[in-house]
Image 1: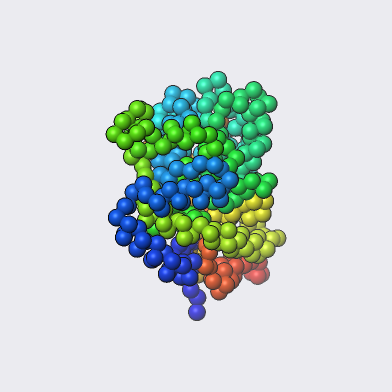
Image 2: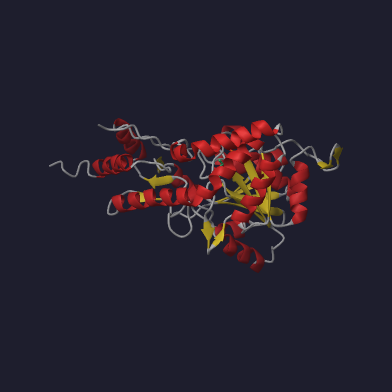
Length: 376
Ligand SMILES: *Cc1c(COP(=O)(O)O)cnc(C)c1O
């Protein structure tokens, strides 16, 4: 009997934690304090510690986190160097803040920012480079930092987007601790996910942290005294913080599960035309199992006929989104981003994925790659 295999299944890994999660939520309900209480403060401390980053601010979601980070970086009216293949979140934040996105290409193998392209695109008006650790693949932020310094542009701030890379590391240092600020989303399907929307911005600099803290709550520097312009409301709530505190100690083991799955896929497709864009070695955390296949739609149809889910992350480059027409942007050569867009396909990969499900996907890949081979 074949199972229906989803691309992700955020409830799967939670059975053993069900009691602890219910207890945590009950504790919040009983506390009578559902925002800016104990749980959020404790999570901020525990997550900063986990990242090795010093300071953490809980916010409403990852997109807000990017907006607040760009605002705190004084990116308004300036340029933000970023990639075009990472789902549009940075572009959305740029637009809200009034920054100009500058799109640079990605490396063909891992589909993360091409560092030389990013450094070359830095111009007199550049304020920020957003390094997105896409699919759990890490960007070498230390190299980026060095290359910016060599160019005499250490004034350019680096914001890591770690929304697909909780727990990943570069050279033994966790993402979130590598740039000037780092943004996390805890959307339910992320490597660390809440029971709804939540996000965080981590940083080491107390001045930036204070600025972020004011911006995330009405521009307040003290209660009812709004001193920072463009302050808004974007808070993590206590229920999400309590849930994340229960889950955080399990993040590393869940990441190991994701890496193991991608490792199995890697062995299964060796010698075929399929390639993996997800790098589960080298500190990566395999958020998504992303393959490249020239006949992507055929592969997706084949898998669908076997009840195996798939998705495309992402089918439209940021600079081609209809909603962003009229946004002032700078667009460098994007040939790798463009060819990848038409070939990428995301297959099931999540903690709690059963061996039978994994075997089913592996069999589906095998029957796809050998199709035609047995024809006379
Ligand atoms: C999910 C995601 C975001 C946005 O997070 P939300 O919490 O959904 O706003 C930002 N950047 C990347 C790379 C993401 O994957």
